[in-house]
Structures are given as structure tokens and as C-alpha cells.
Length: 196
Length: 333
Image: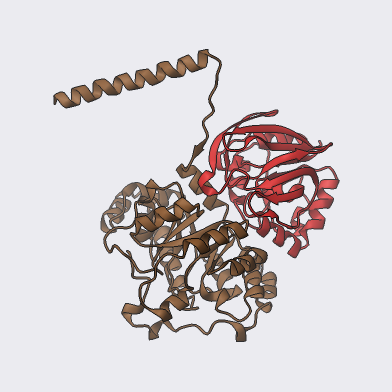
């Protein structure tokens, strides 16, 4: 059973894709008690400030941190990646001071490629293969300290080489959206991290 | 006819030329991965991220900061809040570009702005300064009573208001990436938004019924009678929902209003005058965000509703006291 955090954002797209994968039962998570039988968690795209506020307002933060510390896989896409990061800033505004779950040893810069006008779809080469994905007002991973490791980069004309996929043991941060383009590679990877 | 022979001959040369070029690039080992901006997928993907959230009307960067801190998924920059537009009368135009830019440099969440119905140049300006979403809005004074903006020409996504399904499908046909109910803006009265959402829901349910019964003739008749493309009618009937993200707007003033609209099937909520025309904007903004996300959990909506005082809500306007010419919802059908 894979949980998708359903507070705000495009969680239904994740649910729809997960339904198409064999032996996976997706479930929407809105309360701590929803997480009891879940093997892996996906934090979807949306507005990281909104999802973050709601996580803390409903005390889901402690539950998610405990879940991650137990070694169960957590995937954050876009806003989700921001919420997993220890350090976050914004390209224009600078320090955002926003609260995150601070689970991964990575530094993330929000809106690194620009505004919505600069959002794009493309293919990305990563250690887990080539993914066809969308970058929507996407953040970039500019630093990873062990045990975190960047395993996917993009060469963008405006920014140069930027990290877009990082892994730290059971935690995965992707600054893009596989759920918009329907690429299942990243889901298969998360499923492979579930301890049998 | 000779013109067309020549045209087709040239077209063939072009296609073969491109294929040869692709093969040459492949052989040279240089692979080009295109980065595509402004496509329908990129626009609809962005709109999808707003779902379950609240977009708040603001008139300056201070209000925008309050909205961001409260957990808004975006702000809409206006010169005057819809209530004040109503009171001021005169011509309502797009907001001051300097103010919009100031807001964009102050907050990290998406910034939207309104342009007048049919005013393509205002939309061009908003795209040029980098606004994330453009609302071709009936709150401002329309400049074209026949045609809306051709929104396919823009890389920036557009949202349009609609009172019923045919209006919504016409806007999608013109390139809108998102729909919202019109409601009656600036009234603090959610009645019209409820009406519009229910009218849309009933039409979709009936189209879905025809689809399940394989009654394509009924879909075809609907398309003809309502002046909407058959393909969009068929798509709606197949999906059983609005083909793009559909928010509620027009008159939402309390957390309970927001939760009600979510129950009726809205994908999210616009709040116009309801927040900054109340006397408790900070707590009200936060409460509406909470009620929108947890609309299906009465306990949380109670918690949200308790964060605001009814004595602080905007007084609002009974729609029956408005003269027909004061209605904004009839602009741009």
C-alpha cells in the first residue's frame, strides 16, 4: 500500500498512475491515522508553503518523520522535495524561513529556472534511467552532503547543470513531476526500496 | 491549382530535409534533448499544482505577504478589490504593472493578475512581466462584447469565469487552461457561485449519462444547441467532469463557504473581497486555507470556522438588491 499526502496539490494524478501499477494499492493520506498500514509515502507537487503549513497545523510532521526514520521509503516531487530538504531558499526572494521536515541533507533553491513562463517538459538522464518529466516552477538541488547523493542532473540553458534527483537511503527527492507526463520509472524505483 | 502543386512539393522537401538532418545529428553522436516551454501540458501541469488550494485577491505586497504566510497557493493582484470596483463604478482596468512586479519580487508563490475580457494587449503586458496566471475577468470592464482573447497564442496559462458548462467549454476552446465559477464578485454572497457550480454539475451528469448509454446523438444535439465543439462535449462526457481544473469564485467569505464549494466538486477556491474586506484578514485567510483542504472533515472545518468571528465578516450584498446592469456575471458569455 502506497500513501499519497492529499492536503493540497496534484495528489490525484499520483493516485491515478499508482493504480496502473500491478500489486499497488494507493491511498490518500490526510490524517496521522491514515498512515498506519502504508509501506511508502509520496509527498506530491503543489505549493510547498501551503502543504508545509497544513502538515504542521495537523501535526502530521511527527508522524512522517517517524515513518521515514523507520526506513520506509518517502518520495517528494517538486514541493515534496522542498519539504524533505534541510536547507531551502528562493531564487528571487532569498531566505524563505519556511518550515520543512528537514529529513534529507540537501540544499534546494526554489523557482531556480524562473517563473511559470519558463516551466518546461523534457527528458532527464538519471542513474535510474531516462525519465520524461515536467518541471513546473521547479526547484533545483544545488548541494547534497553524505549520505545524500544527487543521482540526476539537467543541463539547462539558463542555469547550467543543476541537480534534479537526489537519494538518501530510503528517501528520494525529485524536483520534477513524473505524474504530469505519466512516466512510471520513479514509482518502480520507490517500490523497489520497500523492504520485503 | 499550380500553387498547391508547388506548395506540396516544397512541403515534401521540408519534411525530407528535416528527416535527413535528424539522421545526421544521430550519426554525429550529438543528441539534442529539447526543453519545451509554454505547451498545453506545461500550462495544465501548473494549474494542477493549485488544486485543493486558495488563491487570494490582493492589492499590494503587504496583503500578498499575509496571503503567503496564511498558506495561499497564489495571489491575484488587482487595482481594487471586487467590492471596491463595484462601489467605485467607472472603468476597471488591469492593475498597476509596478505593483504586480513588486508583489512578484516579495513572495515565492505564484502571482496572477486580471486583464479585461477581450483586451489582448493587457494580457501581452502581463505575460511580458512574467505573471504566472492571467485571469480574463468579468470583474474588470470588458472591451469586446463579441470575442474573448485567443489564449492559445500565450505561453502563460489563462483562467476564465463561467456560469454554465457551455460557457466553460467555449473558454476552453479559446485556450483557457482553467475555469472558475463566476458567482457574483464583490458581494460576499456565495449564492451565485453555488448556483453556477450546480448548473455545471447537472449538465456534466446528464452528458455522462448519455455517454454511458452510448447515446452519442444526444451529445451531438447538446453541442449544436449550446454552440460548443462536439469534441469537447465528448471529452467532458467521457471524463464525467470539467476537462480542466475548475475553481469556485465569486462571493466566498467564510471557511464554511469554501468547504461548501469544495463539497460541490470545486478543485479549489478563489477568495476575492472576502479576506481583505473583513476585519480579521490574517486569521480568516488561514482558516479558509484549512477549510478548503479539509472540507471533508467536519471537525477541522469547525476548527477553521471558529478561527473567524461572524462579526468580522464582510457585510456583503443581497444579489436581489442589485440592478441588472450592476451584475458582473453576465459579462462575456
